[in-house]
Image 1 (cartoon, one colour):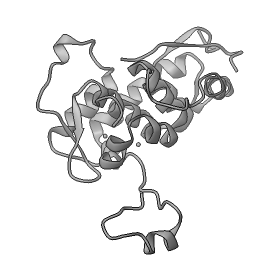
Image 2 (tube, one colour; image 1 turned 180 degrees about the vertical axis):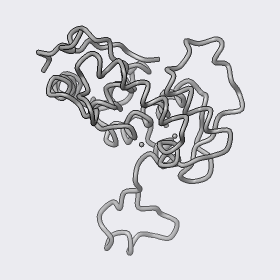
Image 3 (spheres, one colour; image 1 turned 180 degrees about the horizontal axis):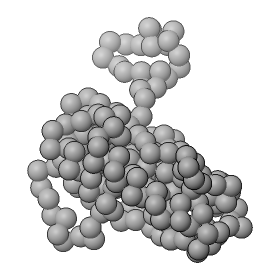
Image 4 (cartoon, one colour; image 1 turned 135 degrees about the vertical axis):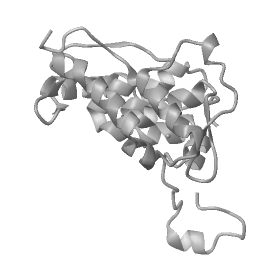
Length: 205
């Protein structure tokens, strides 16, 4: 299967094809958060949650398992991407994608068919006006496709506290300077990829 036809893709795989390893790790973190397996810790870090009831759920993808194993101590998202176990999980993700013609050798960047498919998915799944009523699988897909914009809409407080998004300077520096004291400035669905197709829970707060 070298033309990318009928490849079943998970949201973290779509993120890898669209924006690279950090985006795939971000989707894995959000997957773990939605399952209640990780939480924000000190500002800009994530930790594994003390309660692990994963045995009662569908098991996360291997990338998410590797990410959670790195969170026995709080870690920043940028450090998760550098962890050897996470890097290995990303490398293993790439093998079937390359075999399906979605990543090209030797540098393993996305092929033309992969880029076209991701663009098509973005068009078919625009950001909604509200996060309400979405399934976890739909949230993960939107994060995979729309990155920071989806994080700010779907899991805003977690994303900010965990360091998955940058703190926005709303209104610019001059407005921040004049702000009152104490005010700040600021699973998984399957999708089929056809060659002709178009950054470590809770429901989003």
